[in-house]
Every structure is written in C-alpha cells, then in structure tokens.
Image (cartoon, rainbow, N blue to C red; front, side, top):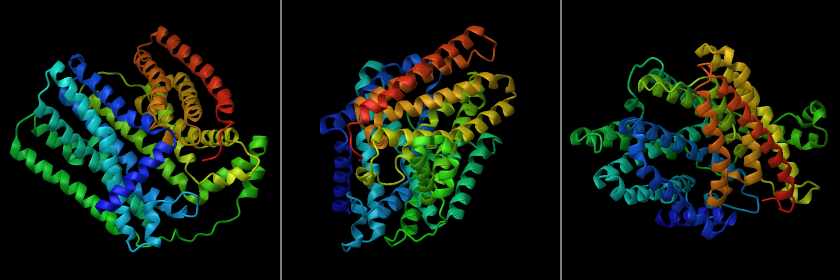
Length: 486
C-alpha cells in the first residue's frame, strides 16, 4: 500500500502541474496559510458578533460539506475505468495488467485524496493559525484540538461520500434510498429538532469536549472513538462494495440524437454539439449526479441558515433574495460536471474550436439549472411567506447564475477542476465571485424591511454583473481560441 499510495500521489501532482506549473501549484498551500493567518488574527473582531462555539460549529459544517464534495470516488473510479483507452491512463486501471486487486487501488485512491487535501489544504490552514497564535494569543493546545476535530469532520464527510458513491455503482435504487435516509436524518434535526447536530456529526461533540470549549476528557475520548468508528465503517463498507472488476458495464440506449437535433433548431450553429451534449448526459448517467450535487448543497444551505436564525438565535435576516443569490453562485458547481462527461481528445480531429465547445456547455448549463433553481427559489418564497419578493429574487437568481458560469468558463475553460488549483486563477475566481456575493448578501438583509436604497444597490450590482458577463463572454473567444483540447 505505501508504494501504491506514493505512486498515486505522484500521479495526482503531475496531473495538476500539467495545467499550471510546479511553482504556481505549490503556491496554493501558502495562499491558504495566509488566509488562515488573516482569519486567526481577526478572530477577536468576529467574536463581537458570533461566539467561538457558533463559529466552530459553522466551520465543522463547512468542512464536512467540503469532504462530501471531494469524496465521490465511486463516480470518479467508474469514469476512470470507462476512459482507460484515452491517451491518459490512471493507476487505478493497473489491475488489468498487474497482479493487484481493484479494491486495493480503489482504497489507494481514497487514501491518496485524504493525504493530498491534508497536505494542500488542512495543514497549511493549521500553519496559518500557529503563526497567528502569538498575535491573537491562542493556546497551542486549543489550536491542536480544533485541527484534530476539523480533520475528523472532513474524514467523516469524505468517507461517507466515498461509501455513497460506491453504492451508486452497485445499485441506483440503493443510492437513492441512502440519500433520502441521510436527508431524513438532517430534516429530523433541522426541522423537527429530534436530536442535536452532534448525532449527525460526532466530531462536533468531540470539539465541545476539548479546548477551547471544554475539558471533559472522558467524553472527548468517547466521541473521538465514535468519530473514528464512523470513518472506519464508511471506508470499510465502500472498499468491500467495490466491484472486483474493471469492466465498465454494458448498456443499451435508444437513438436520441436525431430527436434532440430536431428539437434544437433554435440553437443554430450549436445545434449538433448541443444535441451531442444531451445524448452524453443521458447515456453517462451524469444528470442524476449533477442534480444531487446541486440540490444537496442547497438543502444544506437552507438548514445552515435556519440553524443560524433559530438554532443560534442570531437574527441575521435571511430572505428569498439572499437564497436567490446563493443559488445563483452554487449553480457553477454543475459546470465542472459538464466538462467532465467525456474525453475531449477526439475534438482535435473535428472542425470545432475550444471556445465553441465552451459556449455549448454554457447553453447546456442554462437548460439544466434554471428550471431547478427557479423551483427552489419559488419554494423558499412560499415557505417563508415572501412571494412579494419574487420580482427581485428571480432577476438576482438568473443574473448571478449566468454571470458565475460565464466567469468560471472564461477563467478555467474546459478544465475547472484542475485550473482552480492554480492560486493565480483561484484568486481571480475569488475576486469575481466573493465580492458580488458579499454585496448582494449584505444588501438582501435590508430588503425585507422595505429599504428602497437596498433595492437600488442590488439593481446597481446586477447591472455591473450583466456588463461583466458580456465582457467575459466576449473574452472566451480571445482567450481560448489558440488552445487545444485537453
């Protein structure tokens, strides 16, 4: 296993530096350490509005969700297997020619990403807090306790996602059942208050028992063992459920391309590519994964904001306009799925440019997201009794959705998953996303009270986003026309 793990880490490193450079890629941990240092130094300012307990709770939820988002190894492994005849191969396919089991390589891929994100994200964040300790007067023991607890939350998230994604490769029905069971567990906490959050996330109970929140060492040991049991159970179940075969499986599909082509006459010169995009989405089973990866964060967002408003009793004032802005920014997650449906090498032999394929994926993105997004915002408005805000919320939703996906396409092209590891691109992405998101969030809090200036401010931000969207869309042609397909 050590040799397999080191080989996979080298493979991951080489894949990422291919899209940037060694210097740029290794600058990412320094960037994260700098952000962590800044947050550590400013923590005492934050404590004026939110307690350390509340801040750590939100951080645990965030890092748990982060673990969920990067742990879909069942989906990824199946994709790697089905693409083994491309120009790039992966270590996970080596059981076809080497005396090593597929389960072993699958477990190696899981451990690879645990180590990778530990080195790239979590340890640099720890370093930033340690550097801030002398200035902010943090206890080293408290920093260590927070790091261990957050690491447990991350591992619970990534191992659970690993297990659920492997279940999907076995049975779609079982996958749906597990997802609904998990959603029911979250609803039992968030809506009916049947139990506390520690039941879902035992690492949070461990955090409550150690510095800086407590010193109940016996309870800490118990919750540590429970957290480890969660991680071990999910990982073991996922590893045992992995099929000991490299066959991608056989499937039959009806010929849908002529039907899609006939319906997409309005797409004009994008007609053929868009029809192919929808065929690929259906045949690859990606639509279900995309919907889950889009809806799940929205559900967690709803419960997180509910927890802040009612669980923590902090009157922040989340309303339908706020949710519309968040949905618009979350939608960009689906663009990465659209760029990862199939290998793009074969486009090199066709009279098709990279910018045209990017624009085709943008059109497909709008088809897939706007309906779900609209339904979600309408439901939020109805539940909160804020139907009178829809006239503002829906434009916020549509403009932010289009702006974010076009900006992401401009910055990352057809490789968002890799280019966002480039600190230079990551900083630009943060600038074009966080700034307008922050402005819309702050302004949305004043809308419910009837502040006319807040409405004017939102209209101004939306106008700027429309202009930026037009500039980014024009820039796609200039920036990516001289590149080749990955």
